[in-house]
Length: 105
Image (spheres, rainbow, N blue to C red):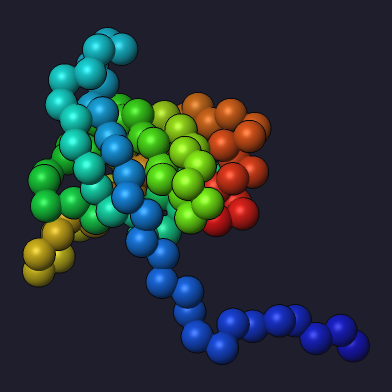
């Protein structure tokens, strides 16, 4: 029976991410957040600033190899932690190249 590999300890992901809030395709606010989890379908962001469920975002992830992966999405869930908001984003537009880079990350 084949063995599955397991990490000895979970990998801590912390990516600097630029965001722009979009309304009718126009950026209304922008800033930086920290991404703590990402895959081909979405990301979990940590931010000191509040967001709104349904808000449209354009995101640029600075990856470990100094590449930038761009994705558009919308906020699906927000939880308030002690210091930061945890913002779940579902991707609606990701290029094939950006998707590969995010999965590799």
